[in-house]
Amino acid sequence: MSDALEYLVKVRPDAMTSYFKFLREAGKHLDTRSRDLISVITKVYSQTENGFRQYLGRAIRNGATPDEVLDALLMAFPALGLAKIVWAIDILLDMDIPEFRPEAFGAESEWHDVIALEKVTPDDVTYASCDGRNLFIYRNHEHLRVYDSRCPHQVTNIPHLALEGKQLTCPKHQWAFDIESGECVAKGDRPLKRFEHKVEGGRLLAYW
Image (cartoon, rainbow, N blue to C red; front, side):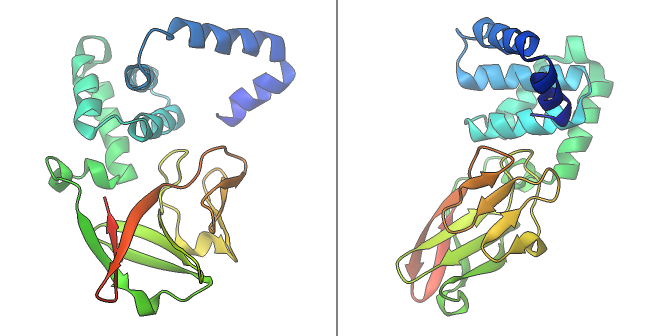
């Protein structure tokens, strides 16, 4: 939610509660993915960049593929026009989401060789890059976790300098995460994306 909407919820709770109830009721017969794609289109129509980034992230998180996002934008061409679609694609390119890179279209998920396990220090956080993705890796004596560096709010790529101890804070809107669990502990309400992983031949592999 934007700072402006949070402000309105605080100072006009009755009106905003009714507004959000209307939105929920209006889309209750749609599946989540369709509702998300429509929300993306409305943000492009109004050219609301923060909203577009937020709802694009939500659509991807709820299962929409890059092909489906692009199809939704192009199907809305009669309402949006080419200029607004290009506006949205420019933002997409700036976000540099791995799934939307040209080489990712049609690619199947697979195991990626991330790093030698001996370089992942126990009870510490390791930052690594692999095949176009940045990752935060947490290891203790019981388990190991591999997280996407992208904030679940607006898919912002969180830099390794944003890590203080075991708390990772997105510099854009200050969503903060506990790196041990991946849970959001401040500002937001969604966890970091976690990748399946395995260890083979002393190497850490992750699946995406």
